[in-house]
Amino acid sequence: MSQVIIAPSILSSNFSKLGEEIKAVEKAGADWIHVDVMDGMFVDNITIGPGVIKSVREVSSLPFDVHLMIEKPERYVDAFLDAGADYLTLHVEASSGDAIEAALRKIRARGAKPGITLRPQTSLERVEKFFPLVDLVLIMTVSPGWGGQAFMQDQLEKVRAVRTWANANKPMMHVEVDGGINAETAKLARTAGANVFVAGNYIYRSKDYASAIASLR
Ligand code: DX5
Ligand code: ZN
Image 1 (cartoon, rainbow, N blue to C red):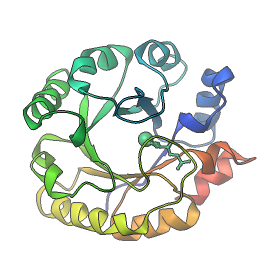
Image 2: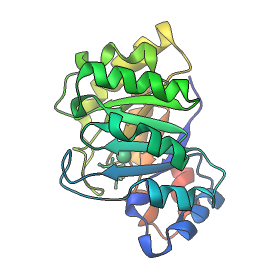
Image 3: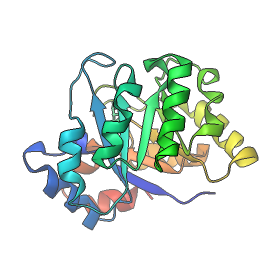
Image 4: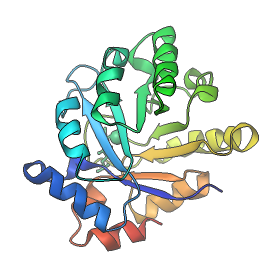
């Protein structure tokens, strides 16, 4: 199965020293940096935009995995790619199917890696048609909006289905899980077929980032 990738979510980090927090997880063995973008519309919370991403981008050489939780994300694809996003993941619920498809193709055309995701209550059928266009499918294992929520085991069925599709059609496609990931839930998700593990609180609220990251592998 594909390589295990650990992606700390900076949402749970100390924003007063964001650059240091990114460097700290890089040093502690992180593979990617997961960046949660929220607009107060698609989800209630508001986080950061392209300006902040652009300024912290230069502190790390790790891939930036940018998860857009914003309405009509097609409006901001260029801005987030200009800011240095390597992976750019869009919510299927955030716009029309045509707009999402065009945005995914644009991400690819600009040399970055497109991803598609869905809320826990959204059926997997809604995203399946985008699988051929993406490098990553993100299965949300909490409702998007906040860190520190409990892992939703019922989403593992989607992880299994996406991995089955990937094995048959596109073995290099990443299957990512995000929300409530810790050493135990990472194991469940891994068994179901996930290979990219986003973790916010579990890493950034731990005393030792390196052992938290190692325990997810
Ligand atoms: C939630 C975000 C997550 C969040 C995960 O909307 O997409 O990336 O940071 O946080 P934890 O790992 O604390 O559940
Ligand atoms: Zn996320």
